[in-house]
Length: 65
Image (cartoon, rainbow, N blue to C red; front, side, top):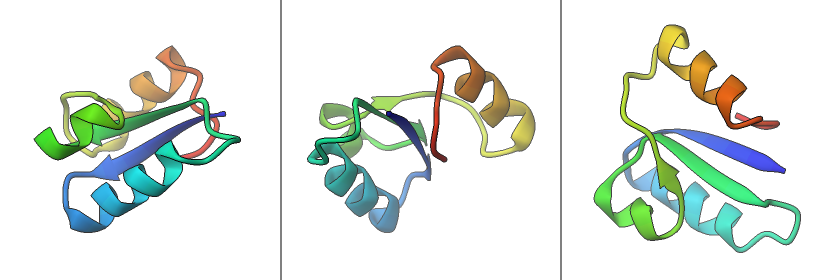
């Protein structure tokens, strides 16, 4: 399963860290993410508006946001 976490703060970082250790999660993506997340997730540039989120979801076959 591919997962997208939206945000760049500490709570989002904790979610990325937990999801990256899950056996059912294939890839963790973050929008926009932060430098600390880069070792755990694929970070995408952009805003957190639906017009920026939707293309990432479609392009990377995200199943959970």
